[in-house]
Amino acid sequence: MTVIIAGTLDIPGGERDQALAEAADLIGETRSQEGCQHYVWSADPVSATRVYVYEYWTSVESLAAHLAGPFYSRMLELLGKYPTQNVQISKFRIDLEEPVYDPQGRPRADFFTE
Image 1: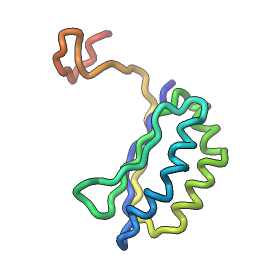
Image 2: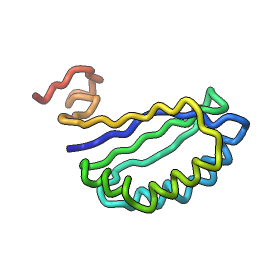
Image 3: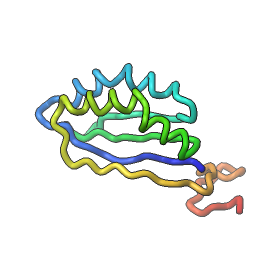
Image 4: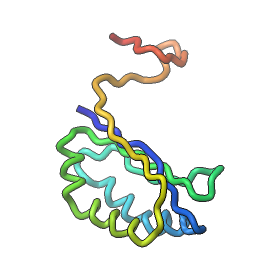
């Protein structure tokens, strides 16, 4: 079962960009983990403090391995150097995935392959 991690946090005091720069190598290394399809922290272009977190794991087991492993420990260590606020990060189990666009190229909000 696919697991999505999504959320936000704030790094105030003008330190967000430094934190993201410092995390770049770690983000790239984390993407090499088995089951990791996407892993990114990104700056909100209209907020000086907001960071968006997005992860896509192919299974609960691959996420569990990540959370028990060195990349997650290093992420916690890195974030511990910066003042974080308003942390709101959630995990979601996904039971159905479809493209946004149907075969005719129309964007669809409904799930059309069921």
